[in-house]
Each structure stands twice: as structure tokens, then as C-alpha cells.
Image (cartoon, rainbow, N blue to C red; front, side):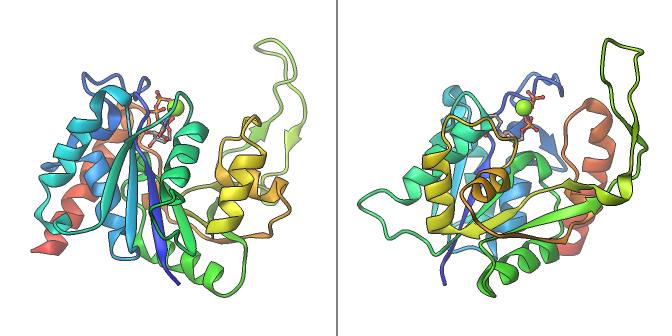
Length: 236
Ligand code: CTP
Ligand code: MG
């Protein structure tokens, strides 16, 4: 079964507040998007990356600068205004008339560039074994409370034992994901599993990893640099 990766990198990174889009932020000599693609490339036959419309050439250049990615089938396209639209554009590219669509699609956020590759492999294996989708999840460490009204007004404390935090890569049967994005294009979902489940797909959980945290704010950068440096050391 062929596997294609959709790596979403079209966001601006407003919370990171750097002078380049988040995907182009350099860590240990490679851009964030290059780290993300490298972490999933071995598990995939094809890769589509979504880039900010004004930075498609820059993202291509950032990926071309990594010799380890040379010769890999890779397409960089302009993303949409929201993440969901970026993913939809990438899926449409994979299902274009002049291509053979993949059997399985993995959707991964460039912002989760350091996700452990064992997590990716486990999610793909779950879909190969018959699930419509598989997503990495982690237990929630914070106490959670409902914020029912204006700041300062609190509702009930939520039982965190029954909750999980969701990461990427999220892996799906390609046809299922394509249909879900088409049928629920106007829904506003924060991940792809939500759309597939709304479509009637059965999505299972696999164990996530703390290295799959989402690089969001400047305070995330020291940890990101730590993982980048560690991965670089493993290559030598
Ligand atoms: N993304 C995308 N297209 C968009 C918005 C986001 O492909 N229109 C991607 C981002 O590049 C990122 C992932 O979706 O890899 C998760 O989004 P997030 O972490 O929120 O990144 P940004 O939207 O770039 O950051 P911010 O919300 O701080 O601006
Ligand atoms: Mg965002």
C-alpha cells in the first residue's frame, strides 16, 4: 500500500513572532519544515508540502538544501487561509488526474517537526491493519477547568483521566480522507480526524511522544533546538 505525506507548513507562525514564517525558522542548520519532512520521509513514497503563498520558492529552497532529501518525490504547493484548506489543497494535488492516488495519507504539521518516527510507523501500521484512521495521543498533565463566563469565572473541573491531547502525524485511508475533506469543507475542524469521524470513519489512538510537541511560542525553541541537535548527532 502506497503512503503519501501531507506536511502542513503554510502558517505564518504569528505566535512565534519570528521575522520568517515558522516553517523557515532555522534550528541546528535546517529549517523547521526540513526537520519535519526528514522525520516522516522514510515512511512515505510521496510528499506534498503546503507553504505560505508568498514563500513557495523559499520552502522549496529550504528542502532542496538538505542532501538527505535529494531525489525524493516532493511537491510544494501554496496552502490556504486556514490549516484545513491547506490540507484540502494538498489532498487535491495527490488526487490530481495525472497522478496515481496513494492508498494511505499521513497528515503532519511541520510545527511538530521532531515527532518520534516510531509514532509515525505505529499510526501507519494501524491503518494498514484496517483502521480508517490512527492518531497519536498523549495523556493530559494539567488540571483542566471549564471557563464558562468572563475571565475569572470558573465552571467545573474536568476529569482529565478521560481526555487525551492529540498530535500529528494523523494517518488515514486516502479515499476516506479525500471524501471527508470534500464533504465537510465548510466545517471548522482543528484536526483531520474530526472530519473523518464526522464522515463515519473509525479512528483509533496510538501512543504519541513528547517529542511531537507543537513548536508554537519562542519558549518552545530551546526544546526544539535540543531535539534538532540530538537528531543531528545521531546522523553522525
Ligand atoms: N498551517 C497551514 N496552513 C495554514 C495555517 C497553518 O498549513 N493556513 C500549518 C502550520 O504551518 C503548522 C500547522 O498547520 O505547521 C499547525 O498550525 P500552527 O501551529 O497554528 O502554525 P501557525 O498557524 O503557523 O502559527 P500561529 O497560529 O501562531 O500563526
Ligand atoms: Mg495557526
